[in-house]
Length: 304
Ligand SMILES: C[S@@+](CC[C@H](N)C(=O)[O-])C[C@H]1O[C@@H](n2cnc3c(N)ncnc32)[C@H](O)[C@@H]1O
Image 1 (spheres, helix red, strand yellow):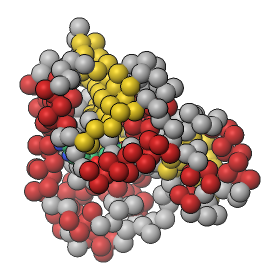
Image 2 (cartoon, protein in one colour):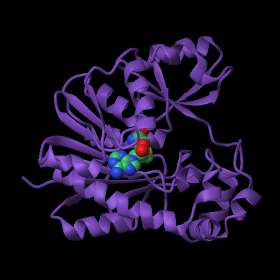
Image 3 (cartoon, helix red, strand yellow):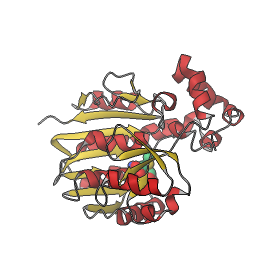
Image 4 (cartoon, protein in one colour):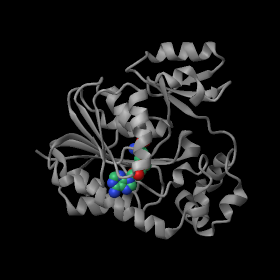
């Protein structure tokens, strides 16, 4: 069910914030998130099945799938039964995941046999993609602070057949004492105020406040710095959120760049309508432009 305009309007501060960010595009954005135009995406689990074989199998069952810019991702135009209740889902042949949410791992692009830290990993959509991109070699250290969410992470890691994943429950900031300059790649998919998911999670409009944004931005900064300290020289780090406020994205990146010697690399062009963030090289994904969740991505490299 898409969010209703009146529902969003009830939270005046959220309404005003989103309008400021979207500027002239505000009406287009609003039309998109309040209409049923959003279609879910699935990601074929290449550890278990070829994307083409999955597509054929699901289409035989009445699904209508559209190719995307990623070879293992499909947009689901029609699904005759609940996706999470299909045999193929149970067998770990696919993960229901927004296209934008696949991009942080896709852009990090870890080599097989490398060591990867996913500092805020639950429920594991990106961990399981990282594992698949590494062809079940090396190690993905999948950490999350929430015990409840780690249960889902473990289920997903098992369902998807990821044998190279180690799961940990810890505050990401505190891992630094064990793993200084240890990882070849780090993903900081930070907790955030989730404005980019409004069309899927209307309840965000009930609790969202500027105070949450300030709280999240402090956690985001701490996780980013911790992730950076655990990255080896020469390694790469992706920072991502599913929100669109500047405080949780560009402002965090700006502070981070002024406090460290990190090099900001341009996020490679994906070609789905993403736009440059306020800091050149970072990317913003807006639902009405990209047919995805709202997202932000920045890419960094550590000098040798
Ligand atoms: C955006 S979600 C992560 C989604 C996940 N990367 C995925 O793709 O499935 C953010 C996560 O950060 C976790 N988190 C919050 N504070 C944290 C902290 N201090 N250290 C580690 N994880 C934290 C939350 O429990 C939540 O699971």
